[in-house]
Image (cartoon, rainbow, N blue to C red; front, side):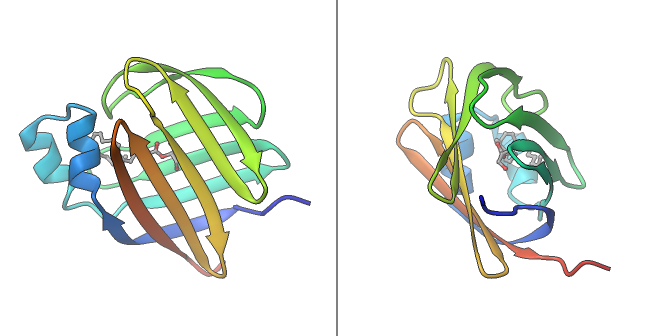
Length: 137
Ligand code: ECB
């Protein structure tokens, strides 16, 4: 039985996001706005099938995938690149490799208690985010 990521999660910390955005060549003005956001993750999981929505007052981003099935990801509204993305399980961690123009790009999600962890990687930068679960209504 794999980890259950379902739910709504609010960001509580965001370390090194600026450098991660720089590694993705995000322009100065966009970075200034993005740095002020408090995004929310809404995750819908059925077995190995996922929809991850990243919601903010500035832009939203959504990705859908099945673990173990490579897909073409268009990071529209973010850095607007195309990647060949593959998500796999590493024990209870969800690991995405985003093959494309940028080296060592990807992310890892895991859960500890009521916290959702996310590490975003690009080239030599790692952005570490933590989200807290919003209790179901
Ligand atoms: C969508 C909320 C943030 C919007 C920031 C807008 C502009 C900045 C442009 C690029 C910065 C790169 C990434 C933005 C950070 C988060 C967006 C999604 C990160 C991601 O890949 O999350 C994965 C794992 O949860 C699912 O897409």
